[in-house]
Amino acid sequence: MIAYDNEGNINYPSLERKGILPESVINQYDYVEMKKDFELVVEILATNMLVHSMYKEFLKYEITDELEFKIFTNDNIKDFMITSNMATGYSYITETDTSIITLDREVYDTSIEMCMYLLKRVKLSYDQLNETEKFIIKSLEFDEPPLTDEDLIALLKLYKNGYYLCKKSAFIKMVLQLNIRNVKKMTPEELLKKLLVEHEKKLVSISEKK
Image (spheres, one colour):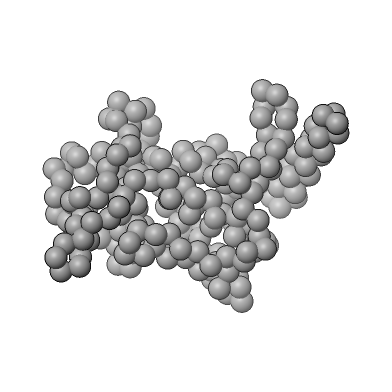
């Protein structure tokens, strides 16, 4: 629960930090590359609104001062993807899957639905961060103009090392939840083929269970 001071401003030092990744875990990842990976996704979100300007209302997003990621996507676009459990060969539909399918610009240029899917997954991943991580991601990647590390250290009243642990934790979590590092670029044809194969697997599994 976000706390406020007597003047109604967010008490930034009191933002929740539960669940920050420990330094031993953070050091297992290439943080610099993972930050670039996430910044690519943020760039895709912004470009999608320009490319599909006629449907901009469906691709709008904002992170409020209360750290809520608000989206305005078409409710007819269901929040699921077909995924596959490689161990069992069973394909299934999940409403909590945060993995994105592709970073291929051409896919998003030709499909408003894929743009909406991506936006929903970024929101779902963001929603799983703690308050301090949310504030850092919002301030560095979504605010205009963005705050600096020095600004955030002062606002959060953190020691430099403590701040950078929170920052690295936030970006690494986003990249892992979105599965960005394992996403391969696919053409629209390859993407369609993949989805059709997964759908056929699901139908076979359902039929075998009857």
